[in-house]
Length: 111
Length: 141
Image (spheres, each protein chain N blue to C red):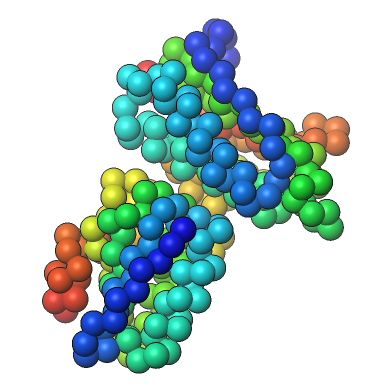
């Protein structure tokens, strides 16, 4: 799995994983989000448009990232989920904790 | 359960993280045998199979390295259901699958088997002599 990172102005960053977000990729996503927040980008949006598959490890990485961002006074949101990722969120009732936004812009814009 | 499978796909591999991609590829092959199965059933079955696979990779090796633990996965397509039959030569799984629950909302680990159980219709584990056997069933009828 590859990760694209875009640092937007004002302490924001977009992280875009590409491929399968599973036990192989999840530790890398955790570390990447931690580094991103540590660098001062505390508002993180994870753009999941190219994440074709996510399992419980990947979900755990998103939750860990959410906690990291919030502990730093920021937040983590997710955007553009694929049907498979939407299903994982619904099965675990986590689509309120990790509410999927239709676009990266909407994810940043929401309060 | 009665009936002969319409299609069977088999993977012989070992309990290393690389096997996860092989498992997804095997599922893709099975979908070629069964193009009529709706996406929802496919996604749920795939998720449960991937979670059990990850559980085996994570826990079955013990002191051994992953390439010393053999893993065989058989995917079977029946008239009314999909089955995944796992056989691995790793250490016994110390888990009561029936008792597995989802952890708290903000838990960032420990959801794997609970995820498999909510995605599929049945997830079962059995120690059989020196091997582990996992079963995942997703009804499609």
